[in-house]
Image (cartoon, rainbow, N blue to C red; front, side, top):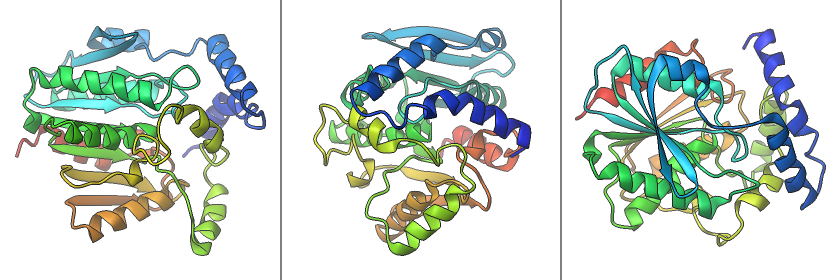
Length: 303
């Protein structure tokens, strides 16, 4: 990653990281104030309202958006894209840009939920909203033509939402694509801990992220062992093919490797793609052309 881009990201995260030493409930209060002060929103930026056809839909007190390319005719496939942001940040321009490129490349329809985030929301509220969106999509969509994509925290939500659909007797999507999923990292081995400290030297994006404080706010109202709080506790039985991307300069790479080993051990159909020196959510970058083209091919493949 270029120095200039890295400095821009560090600057954007600066105010957030200033809160990491605050204790609950002060942490939640100041986090809310920061989001209000910065005017954070998951609404489509004006640029993408011009570049794409975007329809705003409502579920309870939240929105979701239906995106179509202005350049490419529709294909039969649809994508539910769940954006990342550590369960706290609204959608970034990089999420909208990735979806624009994917819609232009494939002609697919993209459903983009703006799900509840901390501190105002929690895992129960977010999953309730996402599940309602999922059921709405299934009303006029063949699940064999539906793909779920999520990056970072959105990757874990893509898995847990699919588990919820399975457990509620709904059909699951054709494939789940995880981009640098934000799995929980508990009970690390000595070797994993040593590697974690080494990765932190490179991971400027989430190396300092106050994971436990966010988790306290996010997990409110859910049982500790619920897969809505830690998706790695959930059963993968009955889930579709899983494609997972991870980079070695991402602290989440440790948990991604663990999950890949689990998929292999349980004989679950999957493909794990790891990039040496890849940062968190590196796949969203325009430089990751091979990864983008692979995802696009998965979206249009209806077999």
